Amino acid sequence: TSSNVEWMMSVFTLTMPAIVFIISLNWLFLFY
Image (cartoon, rainbow, N blue to C red; front, side):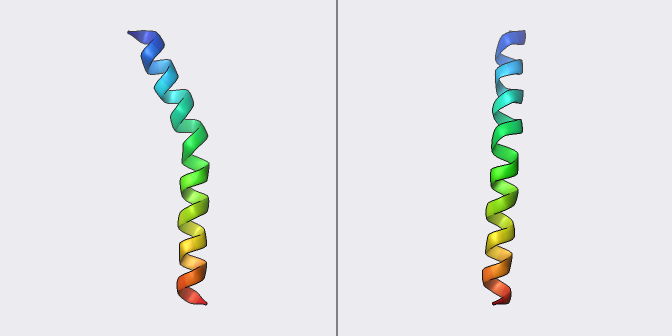
């Protein structure tokens, strides 16, 4: 259904910045 797709897109837009933030922290810990 279209509502399910919209819900998945909203969750993706909310979780993507968090994933990028965690990956950047892992890179910082690798360099330090």
